[in-house]
Length: 342
Ligand SMILES: [Fe+2]
Ligand SMILES: [Fe+2]
Picture (cartoon, rainbow, N blue to C red):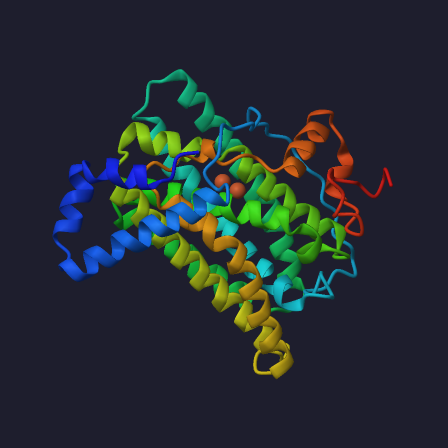
């Protein structure tokens, strides 16, 4: 595989990149170029730049996640902090995903390619299925008495209504692609680290989250293709990625901090230590994937799909209903194992 220094040389001929670099002081420009090329070489060596996609055609099918009456906020008792990070992120879905759908509907009106139109329709169907499942889960969180749920829902609703109303179509499309690129990176991290993060957790919640991210990997190219067809500007793609990431992470932090506060765990030193260890664990795995998205030549098709996700798709195509109840004691297996089949 060629070192991405070749990419750096090629991009030196890119007028937009060259113009952006020319605006920087020489010292910063030199440091940025060195740091970027070194980093890209490391990513290349570690195999982050890879071959072609193996994602299947997108499929929309209803899942039946059944949450136990005894379900608590710490659905992974070994990892309360991770439970609340996921809980807080889940609160965004019923507002974020309708916003993505609305953006893609606007994009649809500007596109004539039948393949892209079909992909947009499938994407919309998948995202609609996702946020409806999260609505059910979020109602359970509200019923548990977490006051952060209505507070965060009001903030997120206002955020996305504001983006849709006041921001440009280009911004919203870049946000959509930025979010999808981030979701692809997170999906890979969650699946690769599934035993550590979801091992012995509540099967319905673990199955919900892994289902969602397997599906995010399945439609990894949908918004990218639309963004490329309608705009394609590198700086807009990167701005969308940074904005979406900072926005989602900031809102998620507010939500999980509020839930931990309510339980008296936020300032507890053991909880604080566990949070920092967890974040270090997650970001050590996430950061190289995230940085790879910054390459001007990034294409989600270059990111190979995890074998576990491919096995999930095979079982899903066979209509296996057990994927809604994964055996979380056996997540280390190369293929998903369902409780019913165990
Ligand atoms: Fe989704
Ligand atoms: Fe998505």
